[in-house]
Image (cartoon, rainbow, N blue to C red; front, side, top):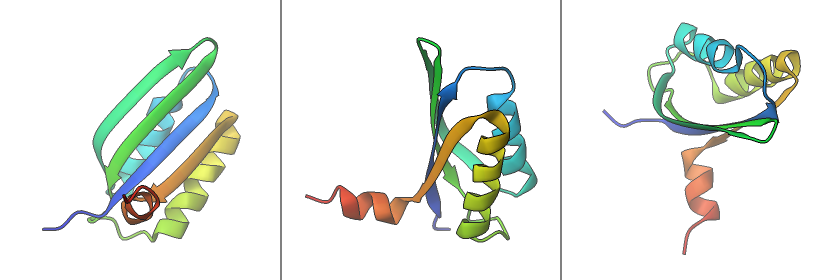
Length: 92
């Protein structure tokens, strides 16, 4: 089964509940976290997630909008990018 991979980036002031809120949304929408990297840089929280939404019934634009809403609630900047776009941008 082929995966439908997306990159999610999260940047903003560090606070409690960031990972919990985002991962809860992903879980409730059948989006699997394939890989995750997070770091605190000074007072900033930075996270990159690689997720697979192959099993999700949601469309990518719906996921993007929901994550942007979560980002606004948390005071974070959340972006989502399909793996195919990432590959095209970084093709040699």
